[in-house]
Image (cartoon, rainbow, N blue to C red; front, top):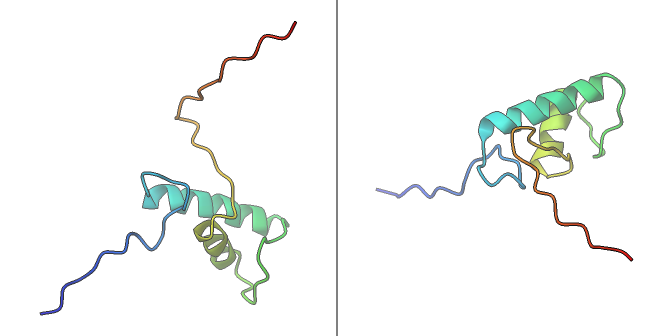
Length: 81
């Protein structure tokens, strides 16, 4: 029998270390809402569906995102005299 090779999730954000499919869907849904509200797409697309465009943008890593549950580490400021 042929062995299945796991290449990783199809739907994952490139910057996401956890590769959460749930996070991918949330980010894509928010981006689709932006596109529906009139935001311009980052990609030239033949698809008129904002959901399809948003999924492709997130998959390629063109959409910036942050996790509000993750603590932000601040680097110590340099002293200026």
